[in-house]
Image 1 (spheres, rainbow over the protein chains, first blue to last red):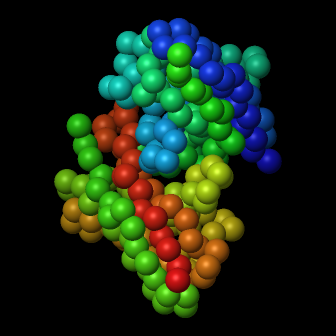
Image 2: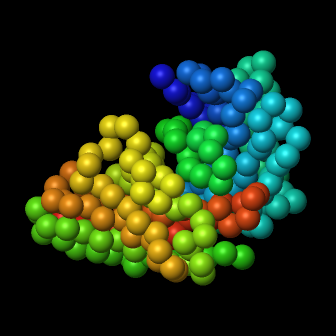
Length: 121
Length: 107
């Protein structure tokens, strides 16, 4: 069965960096597009980033994180990462990794349990 | 950038039909998916490609998409359906957008 397990969330000061990880299992990871989605406390879902399959050469970001966050993958470890730099209080959220369904412009068919990032001094 | 608009809340009596809408410019040109999220839980897809149900999702969940509005319909709503519901579509080939979410109350 598909499993996505995020880790790395913690309390971090504004301006600092943090890297989140998402370990995947139960599917052919290298052939799968992967996303990060976040949810601020009491707020809705916000798409953050996507990385293409295989070599991950195509990466796209929400305007709110462009230039500060980057996404990468290690197919040998079945893991996708979110590197977050220059963190701001408004980046405080639960961060989910999500598996793309593989259908063009379609949905996320599995989600992890999320990891909480709190940006505060 | 593209926006999806949802009503903040919808109330329904048990056994009745709940309709949750999602509006966006020329939304019918895009595939719309719907996610259910219960408190403290991760989202779960209940409808994809406008009207398809993943395996394991009850038949009482259905979807449609026409013009500028997509609709999630829950027939014979049960107490367990009380949750937040989010619509989702792709803005371009490289970015995704979610609606603001609708809190469904079953009372």
